[in-house]
Length: 152
Image 1: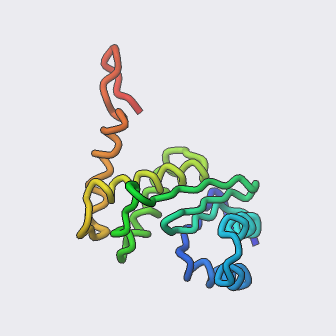
Image 2 (image 1 turned 90 degrees about the vertical axis):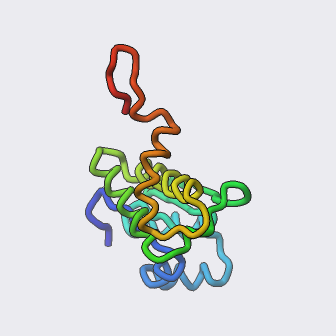
């Protein structure tokens, strides 16, 4: 049954299996994460973001994006209690600012990983929100533009 829109589901593999038991079984058997997340998004009528070292984001339309936090981009310390709640909060904030669900999910995943890399090992979830302004400043968001207007 489709969810009210805009909606973004942000499960890890265990939560994905509880939300979509048949897809979770297929995931456990090694079927393509991309195909399964795409199918879940179509069923739910919502954007689905399956968290992991390679995060898969799919929209109900079938569009899919991957965010690979591996090698020098890795942030394994994100696998900590509450980190997913921070990610969901980033997505909710971007949705509230008018971002479409897929774009909100993609942007939030990038910010979440960048904030974790900036903090480094030893991170707890509560450390992440304090790093987001630094991530945005590094992108030039909020920088003064010619004429004194604030950037967005």
